[in-house]
Length: 257
Image (tube, rainbow, N blue to C red; front, side, top):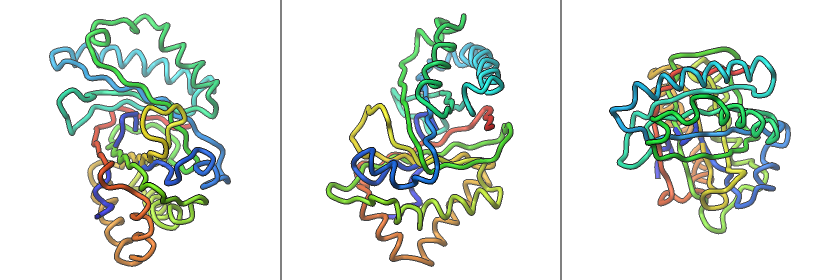
């Protein structure tokens, strides 16, 4: 199985779930960083209503900018899916916070906004996710050229990486280098804290610096697998390729504190 084939989420998503099957293990895999929570909202908007949806999205962006300025959330983004599938999301948003309390506080701001009942939302299928990450990093600022790539993996039954050693020596190491080189704007390795899928599902989420950043990511994964095949083989054994899905999206705007 070639691990480069993983791709961007639902929410947003916006890549990898904890390799261990429980949340305690996910927390221990990177205890040096406090938890980052992400709320992802995805919408399957009828094509004829895309323009109207984007008008409402612009109003939400203004609210999210204020949320960052007020310190309630630490970042946010919007995206439009490039790899469309029948009945699956076409658009979405995400926002980050340092606690579930702040996630819920800001969610109420969006739910009570005038546009929360606009026609494009009422006509759309909808999915929400609450994610937790202890492996994440990114550049501060606002970016308009991001490409969101999300890879979702189910864990191999019985396999785990309780201290996150394999994950850190492989995926996290590559992502940190790409971030330092400017190929990525941000990355997170997420698990669901409110589970809507199998326990232990892993999401690897990157926001690349344009399409060139995606090419650099692919090349870096290829090179890493060749230079340290044993470590990457160990990572692959923890992931079930039959439970793997990718998505690719264009980021309209993202801000990170």
